[in-house]
Amino acid sequence: MARALDGSICRVKLTFGDLSAEQARQVAEAAKRFGNGVIEITNRANLQIRGVQPEAEASLIRALLDAGLGPLTDKGDDVRNVMISPVAGLDTNTVDIRPLALRLLQILQTNASYQTLSPKFSVLIDGGESVAMVDHPHDIWVSPINPAGTTPQFAFGVAGVPPTKHGDQTTLGSVGGEHVFDLITKILDLFIDWSRDHPAASRLRHMIAETGTACLAEKLESHPGFGLAKAMSDWYRAPPRPNAHLGVLPVRDGLTCLVGAIPPLGRLDPGLLWALADLAGKRGNGTLRMTPWQSVILAGVATSEAESVLADLESLGLRFDVRQPLATMISCSGSAGCGSALAATQADGLRLAALLGAGTAIPQIHMSGCRKSCASPSAQPVTLVATAPGHYDIFLRATNGPSRFGKLLAANVTIEEAADLIGENFGAI
Ligand code: SF4
Image 1 (spheres, rainbow, N blue to C red):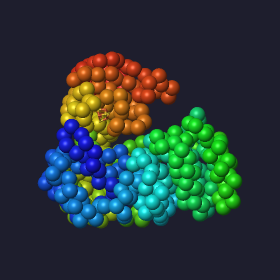
Image 2 (cartoon, protein in one colour):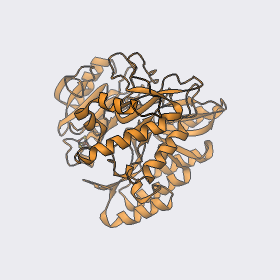
Image 3 (cartoon, rainbow, N blue to C red):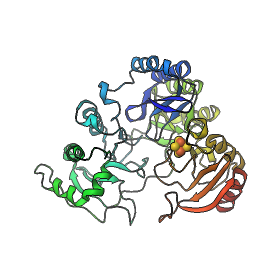
Image 4 (spheres, rainbow, N blue to C red):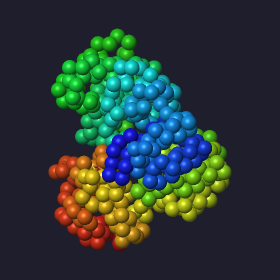
């Protein structure tokens, strides 16, 4: 539970974003009974129930545990941060990393030493999928060098992301697929050892800032079991397909597919979550998968029914056509739920989307209630940062700053002015 302006926020951590239709109904019911009815999909593919009053917290936790949505151990909840692609094991020419990810998730929750890691500590296990979020920094990442190969070798790095283009941070080294689990746990052990003398440090980037990557690489290279190869400056992960989490996603078997769409600003209410659960039961395989883009995927949909399932999702208010601003727009809670917010980002975001209308080149827009940027750890093509109620600075993403959001396009503008400026720059209106 975390405190917020509208009551406590209860984070419901999902294993790789999945929940059954029945679990989804139980979450919907719990949000209605014990929260204010707002359910958010997070950028780590979890759910959050908002507006929980103190007297309802214990009942809510009991309801979620009864739904089978608790951690493996009491102290294991915070460290359940292993990210994988929503199509892991289903995409063609990729490595099925799900067994590795499950094994890691299990040890993170059950090993007392790992339970001391920060709730923000995260590990990315990439299988080389075309639907993947590989631009959010993780404490540790691994990614196959040749995903279609028969004996995968994994590149790895810390405090960053897999390189996808020239100039990105390079790898720390590579190991055979059979050594990836031991490599990750070795890095965790080294970090935990180091952090005993640095109690304020919670992330691997803090260790790297003090010791450098060379020191970590040396310690790993001296480990006899890994057969670790040195850093490669010329390997790049194939960039994922943009917005591939939306629409129809083919899978290996060719008979079924995944169907993805996003609720406006990644928010659901109990009725909508219940309706999605019904749709997953009737037209899919009975599971819902949340994604780090704050969208939903229905799995196991017959390929012949994909278009009609998309129509059903659209009739429920979800978007999948990237020419609509709300198909990609993200927002923090803004003044509806956060005491630090300088504006009502969600209401302003909906208004901005309505003003922009459907265009042909609308970039992803991020609405942020202050400079902390909770909704997106990395810069988005367009970021509006609140300066006062109804007013924002607009930034366009740039590779070299000058700010974390990019280059300032205009300062302290209204939503109407923002819509005009975005239209002028991207031909959206
Ligand atoms: S970005 Fe700022 S306003 Fe938005 S949720 Fe985070 S702290 Fe609050």
